[in-house]
Every structure is written in structure tokens, then in C-alpha cells.
Length: 312
Image 1 (cartoon, rainbow, N blue to C red):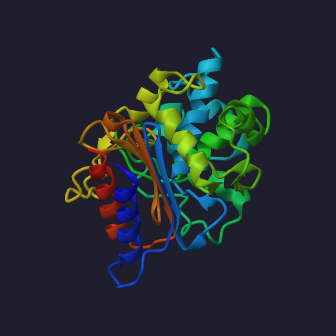
Image 2: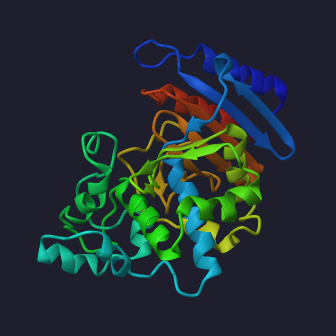
């Protein structure tokens, strides 16, 4: 991609309309390929963006720093010995099932629920102090690790687990282990009660999202190992319900653990509601960032696909 192509891409975003005929509510577009970097703030936008579910990708990196710096935590560690002190499960059958839930099941949405939990709609009138009891009392209807259902429950529990396991405020740990080494200082991670939301509600600047993307592209940069990045990309399930096969490059073909997988060129990405993108294109040594507040993202994601195409 060159400057002229990027400028043309910006124009496409600015002229685009969603399915209702309204302009796209874009905030930022950032593309970096090798040493070439192109950036545009739409409508003079400034300040951090709510990156929504790309927060999961960040928390998975945080988990990696913990696992790789200690010998008492792995992805196969059961979570109930920590969580049991913070909640009460009413159904004995559900309680027995929680004994089998491991860190990896929080990471890849395979706890075994058949209902999507902890999205903004189902918890909007709930006291955050009750969130953990809400989750652990939801019936587990599938054997752990056998059924994928995307939700925010696992990563919120991961946030709780890590704070209790570490014995310190998780945000302080994240700052020390991840954000400070990357030079990320202007951020906000909202809390549900005394715990970080985990799955969502992290606010970052676009160039700080790029730093996360470059870490993923470059095998962890010594903050986590290349093996941990590969673990985050490890296939969990095909996702036909959200796939967009008309987009040749940028499509949610499958899910790993906090990262979505395309079926083209080893492309993988963090993805958030309303137009948040952190796409990694290893073959082209490139990262693409978008942030927006766009409800209907069909056209937006077609243009992200176009951006990837321009890298080839």
C-alpha cells in the first residue's frame, strides 16, 4: 500500500453508507506495512476508543505473561478452587460441572453454556456485585471443551481469576507486565465491581492498538513467547453464524482463543462490536486498525477487506 492508495481508501470510508443509508460512524483508520504507516482520524476525532471485544485479545496476552512467568498456572489449571470462594452455586449438578472448567475453557468460550452471557443487554439492570453468581448459576449443559458459544462470561471470569490468583489489583499487574513495556499510558479499563470487565470496555488510542498488533505480528516481542501467540490462534471452532464469505480476506471464518481466524493467508484478528478491528496480515507484515461506533458494520467490514486486498 502507498499513500495514494490509503487516501483513496479513506475516501471510500468517508463516502460509504450503511444499510440505512447513513454515513459510517468512523473514528480511526491506521495501516502499517513494514516501515510504512498511514493514519487518518475521521471528523477530527481525538482520544481513546472503546475497543469492545478486542479487550479479550489483550487479556489473553496478559494471561500469557502470567502463565509463562510462573510454574503454578497453566491453561489446564482448574478455575473452581479460586472462584468457589467468591460465589455460591445453588444447583449441585452445576457445582459438579464447575469442577471440570479450566483456564482454557474461559479462553475459547467452551465452558458449556447454551446462552450468551454478560453482554451489555442482559446485565444492564444488574448490580455488578452479582455478576459472578449470575454466571456460575447459569446451567452448564455441555461437557467442558466440547461446545463453543461466544460470550463475555469466560473473559470476565478470567479477569476475576487472575486478580485473585495474583493477589494484587489486575490493572496494576497489566500496567507493569504489558502496557509499560509497550509504552501504553493513555488507557482506561472499566470495572464490573472490583474487577476489570475483562472481555470488554478497554479504551485505547489507535497507535496503542497498533503496538498490540505489532506484538502479535512479531511473535510476542519478548513479552510473551511466539508459542503463546500461536496458542491464541489455535483453532477452536468454525463460526458460520458470523462469517462473511463474500469478503475474501477479512472474514470470521473460525475462532481461536481471543482471536478470529480468516481462511486466507494466515490472517487473524481481534474484533469488536461496532467496527473495532485489529487485523494482522503476516504475509504482508502488516497491521490494520479501525475504530468506530457503527451499528451496521457490513459496509465497514467490506472496506476493511478492501484494505487487506490493497496490501497484496
